[in-house]
Image (cartoon, rainbow, N blue to C red; front, side):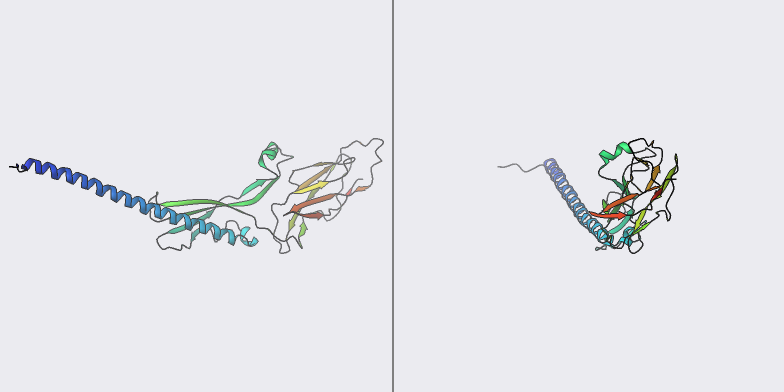
Length: 254
């Protein structure tokens, strides 16, 4: 005849069963919470990426890109799902070196040379998507949006001297240059190249070419011909693979 379970054995069995049940329930709950959070994170990432894509499309308009900061992407942004809050902010514009940083970094900090830097080549945009007020319940994406390509037809050269500058012996002649498109919007990232007859003048100035100083401190000796009364000055730039030819005023050599 089998012996019945004692009260102590029943209590112990119930305790063990309850412990296992609570453990399973707790693990199931945690798994559900983790799954739900992962779902939120995936959806938030998709929403943030969509916002970045929208910003890239919006910035294809040069008027939008040149805004500082971007009015449409410097605050709350429309969210496709009500439970998510989307905010965006533009960070300080970043320059890019041409042709690359590893070659140009040797010039950084030199007052007369400087690096060939395109100062507004990209705009960093940070997008944050959150689904609660907890610091962990949010996703941030950082994207870099480049300057849109513009048509250079009808581009206008600005800031060049209106009259021929003069470079007396031991003196200098200063040139500045900038370019605007047909709508009057600047090309802030253009880099310029200057050329003049080095037998008589020396080029000095920043390597980005936005300012050029012609220095007349070259000693002219035979067989170099005597110094002419003036010299032509050449300036060129490239934009999106197209050449921009600029015709500065000649420099006088009194």
